[in-house]
Image (cartoon, rainbow, N blue to C red):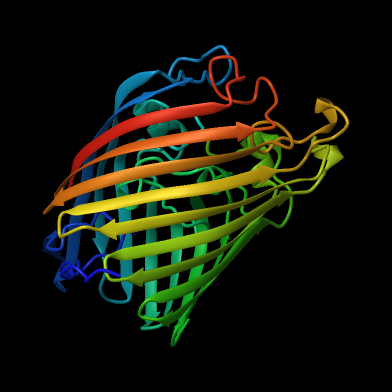
Length: 383
């Protein structure tokens, strides 16, 4: 392994979480408010993306204003402000503004549509009671415990989130308890899953810090009841919201390298009464890698594969979680990144290939294309 680059100054705030290679402002603006002199930090992200892609998709089929996928374009990926208090017993975090949620193998929605039709202009906000150094309780609009990629572009190694991320919840409303005991960190949450506004999900995470270089996490989440179709939105896919999902995530840090393979399994049980006609599942794995060339240049990439079940005798007796019942897909992403202080620029190329797809459920204007290539360039400031 190469020599470790000089460590970046540690920021006093850790929310929103960031997996790198981007890093937040190590000296964020703060305000001393209130008679007790409470320190409130104000940070944010202003970023934009230009992109070009093959096989643009219409979603829903035939096109709807705001949801048409374009061969090329520009979108504001983040125009957000984060306000938080991180000291004392009573803490809070508020995230407000516009955002885009680009991911592989799905249409690129307009930012105005995403911000209004997914999680609103305040996508995350919660209060936190830090009752002891190792025990806290949170409540509000919480980032999910599931998966190895975060929700917003600047938080991740790559601009576009991956195929496994497409199966995961992103933001859930609910309450969460956190407890640490030595190298073990535990979190349990009662929430509304895929932002369904029905509080029948339980999520749990157990993370083991093996040593300074290695961590291992086990995550499980699932619907304890049934959530009807009345909650169906772009943030709340009906099938996934009535299933369960599990992860095993390993992260290794060695000098300039960050290597994180993870495994994911999700399942949805048949429920004829509510229109789920066949058991279905997805099984996938991904490898995320980042390499620091120097203080400014980083190289990041991701490879992943996901397969699905759910194929019945006919399409009417099948359940589709991917690109048709029984389909599978793999992807490759490469993202070189340059950051100078709070400013950054990064380019990205990605490729998605689909196998065993069903016509009408794949890519392209007619849902019949089985591959897609994208190029993107994102620039911004993390203040």
